[in-house]
Image (cartoon, rainbow, N blue to C red; front, top):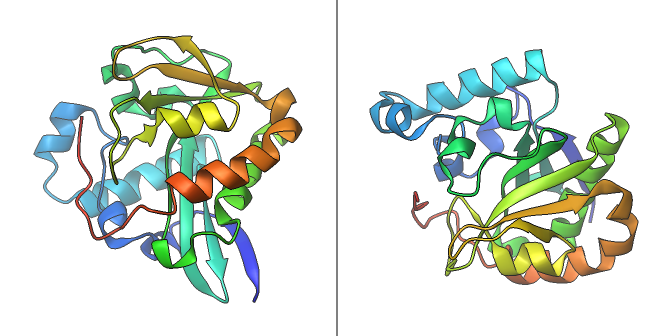
Length: 202
């Protein structure tokens, strides 16, 4: 079984799960997102702009040539939805991990660890100090946000508490120490996500 991790580009954007390919939850502010006539086109425009201005903003994992999971991330400046959370803003020295997903049929194979390590490696090379994310304390299934339980399990620490959406942070200098935790927690929590279920907005 061959596995590879590649950066998301316009050429492979269609390899995202169908619902995720057309989802602009993070890429547009709430009002613009509701008004988007063609979410798929908006997603493509966001990817194109972010790649040109900042660089790689996501990774796709392939197993034997089949897309099996992905993760997306970007500085908060490029993520309009990030300011809609009650625990915003994301720290100036951090990149926001927006969302991640592993297809159920590929759960348990270490793809979650592979994706997050790919992000950490990429951002470390780009001299980013930390990854931040908005956790969901009431997460109970597939959505655009990540479960707070997962983030805490892989080494994130709460930097701004909230009853629903705490903001959490992972210092990249600590990345090596949480690799094993990432494998366990990501496969347990992200591996159960089904792309066929609707992504729920906040």
